[in-house]
Length: 402
Image (cartoon, rainbow, N blue to C red; front, top):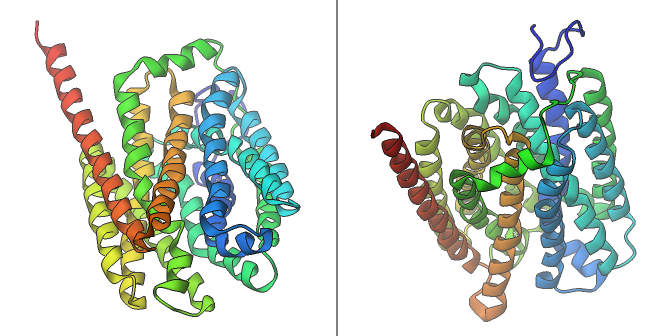
């Protein structure tokens, strides 16, 4: 295999599938802590003596860490080897999650969740650039999807396991397991990732050039608004199942796993369509998400219908994969910052969705109102998608005209 993206000539052969797996283990760790924290909300809120809307701020603190950390780390590490950076980021992630597991109070948990979020976006951004660099251009979205499969499989396996631990042993163990997974990722990346040299032309200023591109901002806006609906529902899903659907606690993990099945299927199937028609696929996903979120309000009282709807909501999780490839197309030579910012955008959604959903609940509209909040956010993302498509068409016409 020829050296690419600064990979050292003469180094041992790099096997894309093995590298993708190593990177996906990190995605599994991140997905477990991100989504499991939402499912554990009833348990740590009770243990720490706060109500559910207040406990939701713990989730928002993690999301804020991602929003802040992704661009900051991407810019400051512009001249660092991607392999080295991935190892350091997982080290930070392991430490912060370990501290979350021993947090003595609500305020300390807020701080440690913020610190846990800092490496999230930069890890995924760099991991996906590495994954895409190992395959032909026509398979980039599929390569990105393979890394994100770690996150989606986490919603099938890691999150239900964490929820079971929260019910039977204690919510703190979930963060300890995540820390161990992060250490495993460090070992796998150190062993299998290509030994690359930093790009000598890279600089913080070049990375900041991504912020001058209109299509970068529009793509980020689609994710930040459009995906907020998924988080508005998912954050309060466990609470809804207990209070509205009125199921036993031991059935919650199965619904969480159903969400993960939807996300996993989406990340396997959707990238194949996205590699052929990227933006069209994104628009369809947003509309389907809006429909599934609106339906959530109507079916929340029925366990089986709710479970099927949650699978449909999970399918829209592949939007992150699609928009990641879109950013590769529109970011020019500022790839690292743009790739990391995608996860800032999605964790802006992670902060916005629970916040707006919590406001609707606190206003007395009930737990099922989160579905309507989510539908509105998905439609808001679709409006931004329309603007992005029209702007792209206009730019292309201007380039053609003499």
